[in-house]
Length: 315
Image (cartoon, rainbow, N blue to C red; front, side, top):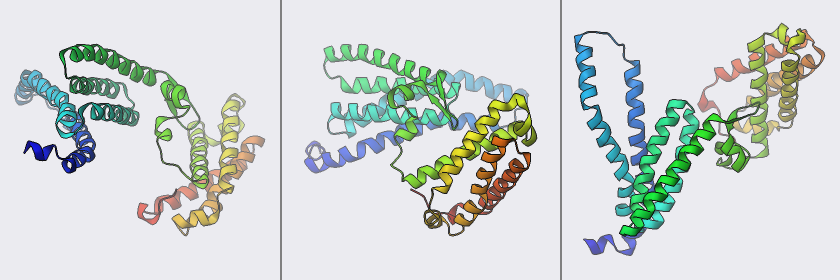
């Protein structure tokens, strides 16, 4: 059996499978507390003797469950890198880097303080397991303990800094670490390459949404006319100008490849809406701004009347 496990064909299979198996195990383990918390939060709470007994029972066994859960998380990377993977040290480095990157992306999706704390604790436990997986001799184990503590502290600092110090743009905000390292959000840096037409579609949509949010926040008349909202009005004008510039550069054939009726709705409602807004906010023309709102709403109504299956993916 040992010879079969160490044979070249089996090693190749193990090298292919250890990453997906390890990631699936860890992400299932990480999702369990989140799912349980959401399930409990949705349950109506009634204070009675049964709920008190249930709470006491959960508290009494909570420590043991938490310890057992932590051990599962700790030994999962060891199972992945020392048993499934054919080359332990190489597998540990590859799996560790990939896990931290994916964990960072998952945190970006949650982006709340409690999710940050949970992410850091889970990541530290996994990193500890990876450190133990890498070490073989006694000296290496001692050295890797120190390295593990340092790496864990750095990971914590990176997550905290990226969560607390944000870079704001008209479309979104993202962490300072992403700005320093890549100059843009990590999700954009790791996204597959898109065509120029898709980038124009995304840009025009985002800029249009910014203007719509400003109108909803301040009201049509106030945003168009009131002097104290001059800064917001100028932002709306710049965003609608950028949305219009990107929108008119998209070929109709590109939109039709996604949905045959999309060019008519896009150039018949969305583009005129951006045109009305860019001139309306520049000249404080309330009539034009209102016409832009009407066109924009007509485009949204058409989009909402369609099913997701009515559109083919854009690239």
